[in-house]
Image 1 (cartoon, rainbow, N blue to C red):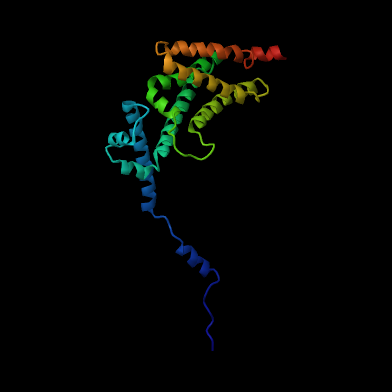
Image 2: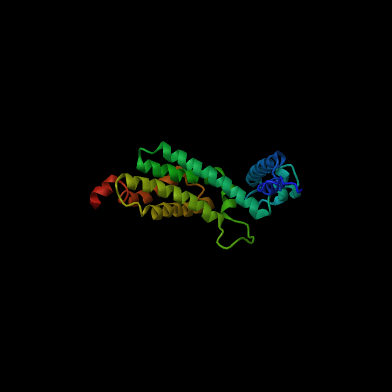
Length: 233
């Protein structure tokens, strides 16, 4: 007499699931350690840039982090990977400052513009070597179309565009031009800021911010404000 099989049809699948590799807590802890270590090395790079300038070398970064270049390369694939991490840091700091400055001046459209421009120039004034470092990507091979500086400016431009778009929607107006105006403002401020850093150290930051705001407001006050809306209707 044959014995009935006790094998359940799903048991094979259960065995397959059990056989799959599982990430244990040690792996998760190691991931967290790697992230934390990358952040520490990025912070050390910022300090090294401030001390040695935008042309800082990996040896100087390693010395600032009190480690070796081998350890730095263990956490960053190459110099370009480290550069991208610094760009991410700068973007986070700058966008945070822009949001804070503009939020504080939200009731006054022109002062909001001045505050945003001043926040950008503030980074240049406070961290000129870090700014130079970010604006001069290392000459390394990178995927076509990958430009961290453009990405940084795009993030800022999108943020400004959203503020303009919100104001246009509040007035029941077409928000389509907001992207153009937001990115045009960033391009103008970046170009003037670069020239200020290179050749006009005696010009006070607030004076430059005011000059740029005067130029930008001449256009925005005719296109974004409620007065402009009533004139267009």
